[in-house]
Image 1 (tube, rainbow, N blue to C red):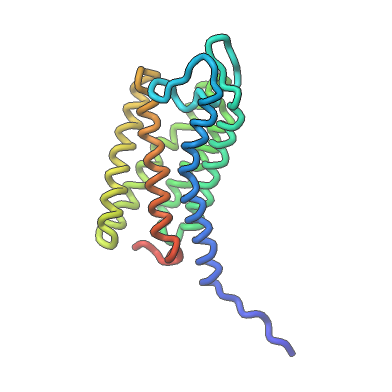
Image 2: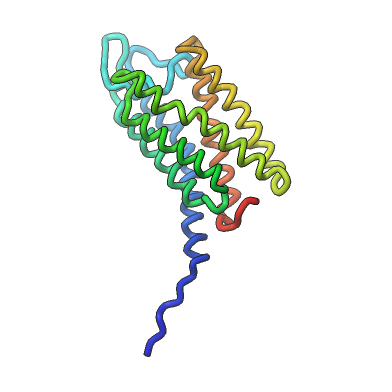
Length: 211
C-alpha cells in the first residue's frame, strides 16, 4: 500500500514568506507609475506643488487633465494590494502589530484607488488618511523590535519613520500649498524603499521571526 505524501508545513510557510518578500520588493516600481502618468498630463503638473491624487482625477478641464488617470488609480489598488498581501505572508517575520498596520495601509491605498479626488474629496481623504498614519507607525514598531538584533536596519527604519511622519503632518497642514506634492512624496516614497530593504533582508531567511 503506497504511503501518503509527506507534507512539510515549515517549507510551505517559508515559500509563502518568500513570496511576501517579493511582493514588498517590487513595490518601489510604483514611483515609475507616477512619472508615466504625469508625463501624459496637460495643463502642467508639478511633483513639488501638486498632490499625487491629482494624477488620479478622472475629469478634464481646459486648465488640467490626466488622461492616464485609470493607470494611476489602478496603481493605488495594485500596489496597495501587494502591501497587504505581502505583509500577511510575512506576518511571522514582521510580527502581528506591524502586519496589522501594513494591512491597514495597503487597504487604505486600495480604497483610494476607488475614490478619485475630483469625484468626492471627502471620501478620498477618508480613504487615504489611514495610509499616512499607519505606515510611519509600522516602521516605528518594526524598528523598535530590531534594535538589538539588527541595529543598523533598526536605525534606518526609525529614521524613516520620523521623516515620513513629519512629512505626513506637514502635508496635511499645507492644504495644497506650494510644496504639498513634495511633502506627500516625502511621506510615501521612503516607506516603499524601507520595506523593500526589509524584505530583501528576509528573502533568504523569511520564515525566521525577526524577534
